[in-house]
Amino acid sequence: VVPVVAVVGRPNVGKSTLVNRIIGRRQAVVEDVPGVTRDRIAYDATWSGRRFTVVDTGGWEPDARDRAARIAAQAENAVATADVVLFVVDGMVGPTDVDEAAVRMLRRGGKPVLLVANKIDSSRQEPEVASLWSLGLGEPYPVSALHGRGSGDLLDAVLAAL
Ligand code: GDP
Ligand code: MG
Image (cartoon, rainbow, N blue to C red):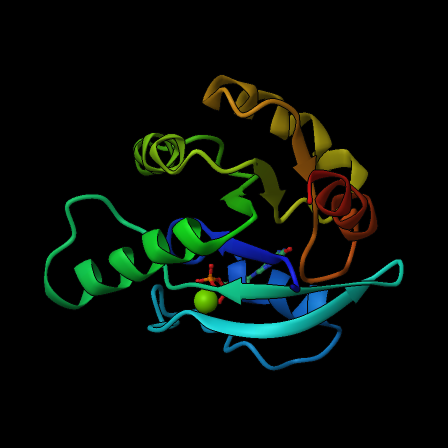
C-alpha cells in the first residue's frame, strides 16, 4: 500500500506550489486567487526511492459556507485518509487565527503533522518562522516551494514520519 501525504492549510499559502515541487512537475493548479483548488487531487511522488501519494487540497477555512464549506470538508477528508499531514502556513506572515483553528481541526484528526513555513525564499527570512512554534506543532520546516529551498529536508522528514 502506498502511503498518503495530505497538504492542507488556508488559501494562498502555497500548497499547490509545494505539491508541484514534491511531484517534480507543474500539475497542481497554482493561482493568485485564493481557494482555487476545489477538489482534493492525488499525485504519485517518489523521494529517496520511496513512493507515496501526495494529495493537494483547497484552502481550509473555519466556519466556511457553501462552496468554501465543501472545500474545507474535502480538506478534512484528506486529513482523515492521510498517513502524514503537511500543514502549510505562510512563513512570512506568522500564525493567524485561521491557522490556529486549522491546528485544532488537525488535532481532532490525530495524524502526524509536519509544520511547513512556506515562502521563506532566502536564509535572511528564516528568523521569521520562530513565531510559528506557538502553534504547538513542534519545529517549523522553512521552505520555499517556489524555488525549492528546504524541500529536501522537508521530504526527508516526511519519509521519517511515514
Ligand atoms: P494555495 O492556494 O495554497 O494552493 O497556493 P498556491 O500554490 O496557489 O500559491 C499562491 C501564491 O503564492 C502564488 O502566487 C504562488 O506563486 C505564491 N507562492 C507559493 N509558494 C511560494 C514561495 O515559496 N515563495 C513565494 N515568494 N511565493 C510563493
Ligand atoms: Mg491550491
